[in-house]
Image (cartoon, rainbow, N blue to C red):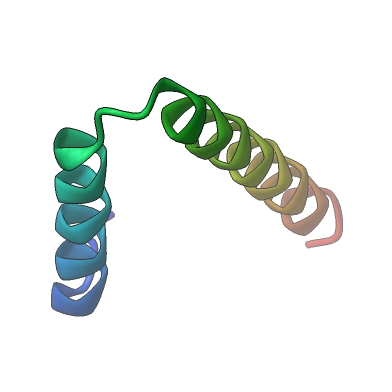
Length: 52
């Protein structure tokens, strides 16, 4: 599956934000937020597959 150009730009913006941060607390919060989003995406994918 290929990401759209807008999604690629958004991904690059997030990566640049991570690269530019020197605040460990900010990076921890971002990592937790991304972990939550990843889990929600997995749950949603499993729901879609189960309800086909």
